[in-house]
Length: 260
Image 1: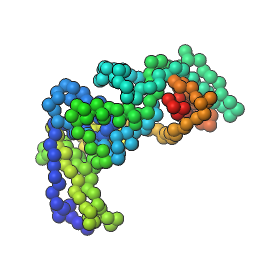
Image 2: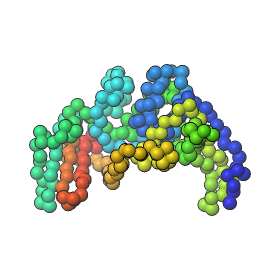
Image 3: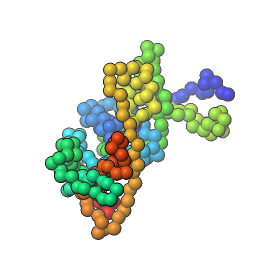
Image 4: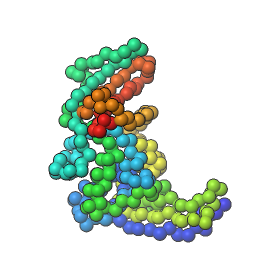
């Protein structure tokens, strides 16, 4: 087995800010940093082959964050906020059918008036265009696999994974070392249960005196339906059957544009 000390040195690049994850958080942070100080050098690493490839895509979005980040977005022809929510339905399901619950009985969180139904993949691609226009460097297809520390134990950046490793774990003929991306600040925006985030939470005891994280299993499909079955702007949530009373959960159904 090849010893790590026998491998060639990694090449390194230095930036003011290194951001891991080209999701809404990472891209918004990159945009805001360049708005505050255009001279900052900012890089975003994205493990997906393209921006938006690994994002959970269907969503209902409150535009308050976009209004503050990019106030003129409504005047852009290519923005992804095409479908404003027109109707909220809440259904209690049973084995034989459903009952619609009145909207006034639902918590304010479930009121989507003024929100938009979007593909978050499209939102991320749109944000990436804005970030690049401001001078942010975005590297899709590169997963950050290691946190880098200095001798005092402070985070100084991340490294991408080595390429061309054979099944036996040995470097193959196409082997190439990963790249070190060093930053004065490193922002981890890699999403739920990110491997680097878990390492940092453990190393710096970030979960001390904090609530336990909660996780759920979600299954999502994108359907194209017949035009007569499509109601642009309809948001429908349901709970109940086939889940028992002791199991939290339910369904969502969002009608986007193009009969999706």
